[in-house]
Image 1 (tube, helix red, strand yellow):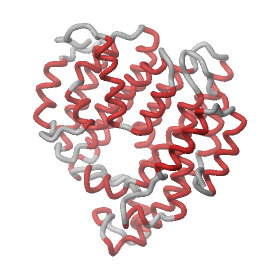
Image 2 (spheres, rainbow, N blue to C red):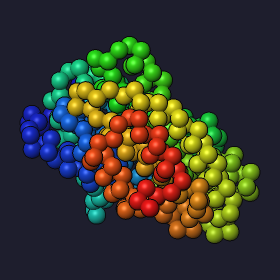
Image 3 (cartoon, rainbow, N blue to C red):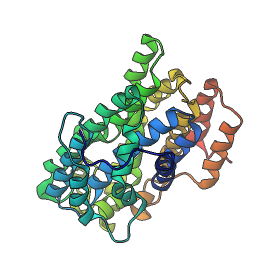
Length: 348
């Protein structure tokens, strides 16, 4: 159980948490805006608790052994049976918070506020969320420890890539599914659980395919499998070198193809997700369709990942998609929107 807790959570704390999500993630900001209570606060807090661990794991300026220690200490704060101290964790993490504090690090700096707001939730959703969040934290600690001598993650195989994707995103899919499946039929809940992994891996693989440059330069992480890079005669420490643009582009294509394998199951997840407890189809359909659009861009210009480091759908297409859902989109139109966005931008 956490000790040294500040005052009980307030409405102002929850409002801060909502604002924090808007600062750190465009995609999750869209999701939170479309959820209603109580689902909105559950997903908001679950996401921020995961983001704290993710920010520590992505921090290229923190030695890997220190990352592992910080993640293990953070996990103890989430364990109701452990004797973790919020103040001790903050004492250990504060020296690593950059002076020019970004939105991500602002969330880390406000870990006590996020934790106390999480602990203010009703017991049922809180306990549904706790295990998946801790699995994410433990998985990230395992990976930072695994590559401690490398100074950053250097994934070796496609199997290891998908193992990492599970801890980074599959666990979040488990959290979401646990919350939205409450009160639905056993058959429907089981179908959601069967497809939640595909939904999460689709989104994570898309991010890995498009963010090669920033992952390496900002985080000192290489998620492209070393075995695929070796097949293109690319050294894992040279993924952004101009001489290897062609080979890295080919690997980006392979990761994109891997992501596309999960599209059908991810859509099936959307086709059965219930709309209750404040959950709304649009909250998850929009990120899915944005992934479809990003895959289109990756197929059409994969070389831009390494040449420009900027492959994403345009703001105009994002706006056009949001407008579709403002008017209300039935599940029956998901396939139509997917097919259109896989071929051309929605606003054209």
